[in-house]
Image 1 (cartoon, rainbow, N blue to C red):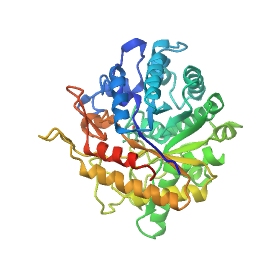
Image 2: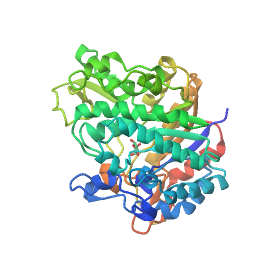
Image 3: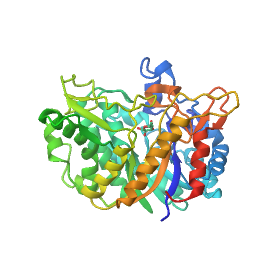
Image 4: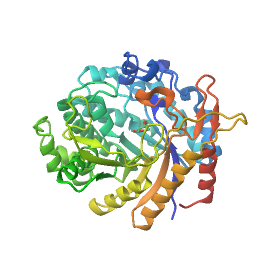
Length: 441
Ligand code: FCB
């Protein structure tokens, strides 16, 4: 059995070059410049300067033996202003794709990893239905430019984050605290996905961030809290895409926020157009109990305001996320059992730790090696249990701009010195390279 080994990044987190070659502003440019939104007021203005260093980075990937590279396309580079297509923006991805193919690395672009052009937010953002149509238009433009060399397309990365962190509690750009608008944003993201599907060719999929949710006790209120979190985190997204329907219980949970009149006849048929793969991003499980409700606007977990996370007593990464690879295994098995058959890829999995360059010039990150090893073993177990898992992308190739956390959370298998832009493969990168050379999972 062949298994695809890769690593992932996203445009705003690594490219920098925020004003080069006609790029327009995105919601993350605006948000990161808003005082108090990102730790230390950091921005993606320079990030890993990948826009200028992509050739070296492609060479670095080749050195590690990566077979695939999951990156995202910056919409504001391609459509910097309403109705304008920026050829120079497309040219960058043209060069990047060529650099990857020359090194026998499969390019795996994601069309939207959170950097909405600011002009589209000004016109209403994802709560506005028109944004879905603008997304499809943009998807068609990128496809036209790269279709001769790109065979794998992901429409969206983690619409949960775009909609709920972006519009429900405002932790991410555009920073709106409007839970009702967030429900519409969910739908318009999914609609944009479905509208884009027939405009793309090859292998087409969507990436969702999913968690394995369990109740802390068997008490009915804890079981209900877990049902609600599972609903808003997982089923609100995967059900419409793979089954063509919103889950009735989640619609009931959200009834106080939305009457779902933004769902038009035929939308769910569009959203559930067949896809070739589902990308799963997995980091951490959720152990949930019921407690005092938190105010609306303060949580992305809309419809689950009484749910609280319970300490599972496991080790944590520097994000504070508990490490539990059994959650990944169980999630994959559930997807196989509960949903129509579709190829699965882990499109992100990884861990942030406080890495430093040692006096020997290396970055010793045994915690990350342990994390990756455990999660890859969970993938192998899932495959033995019949899960059609076809590949794995480590998050991330490079240390990068970790959204509201800025540069202080290092997820890379390659260390980046943000003063000098020097790249140093960490021990985990060398370990991962050896694992790839070994072959199958
Ligand atoms: C995911 C995002 C990715 C990165 C990782 C840590 O939610 O897709 O950009 O921030 O988390």
